[in-house]
Image 1 (cartoon, one colour):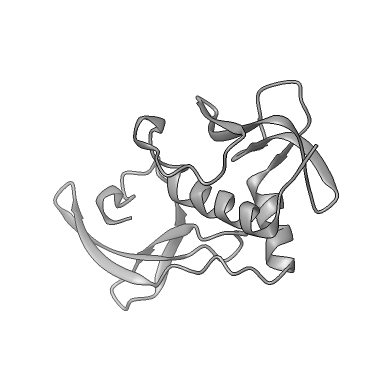
Image 2: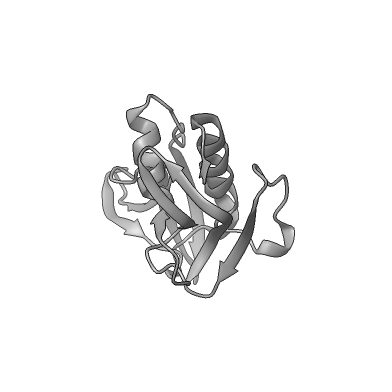
Length: 152
């Protein structure tokens, strides 16, 4: 059985935060050895260990970005690992707030990109602002036409 150190788990989670939205064809700088880094249609990042792995009392063979982790082996999510690391004092940082104006279908929209207030890891939250700069609508997802793909 393999035991992940805090440094290995931190490096793995930081790598996952950086690469989970990127196509696996350009992943690089794999943080640890002894595992495979996979991508599935319903789970953008899965780490499959060669042997059962333990971190903070939890035993697993796979870590997935979302809850649907393919395979029959025991698994955990990155958010649960990140939550345990935060309890140990590891800081994953935050996104600085950023205001942008974007033209969509001939109309100008003011958008605010900020740290998602409920996420366990840095995750952008996109908001539409009114004329006064107050949040009119928050929680814009990547499926929305308002999502600023080039700005994140």
